[in-house]
Image (cartoon, rainbow, N blue to C red):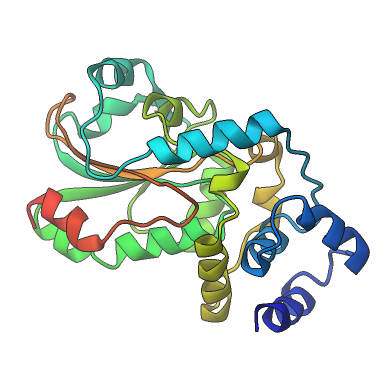
Length: 258
């Protein structure tokens, strides 16, 4: 079933990528024999050759295990947020914690602006924006990349919340979001990608292969927080354990007081 769907999706959506069966098989076999994981890799990075060292594997597994949902950030994390800057679509730099200094916000951290799973996350949260608005809660999305990438994401998705760029990945480092190939290409992520393609979602290849994304490998996961009002008031934090790890929307709305 996965192999058949892979062939269909690849011919329809990735026909511009000239990939031979031999090279694709070679690139994917180093990651996993699981067809779902292989499919997620083929859809995400169809023409990239991944080189993984044993130490990278171990570090990735350890970071994935350490991630958690609904926990409070450390004092060190809280104190570092004032020095983290994100940029709005006009290029204005804003200290991260100023986003919730005077209001309550739901902040979604995307894996990168071209990510198909992150486009679903944007819609997933925006579908409840009326409830958030009724509770005076703002909806924000932050992506690791340039302001131009953030603008492209805004234009393509028509996201109704605020969008900010984090070119330095500083907010992701501050929250210690997990990172690694093995947190990106998982069976669950592969199944979700298949489902999203069937729903009509698509990866943006241009954004996925721009320097800001490729230089970091695109392996950093994101998360969702509920914070404010007040810079130190972070009432909820979800750290994605793997790509596409959206928490139950009920948990987010509960943290909003909705």
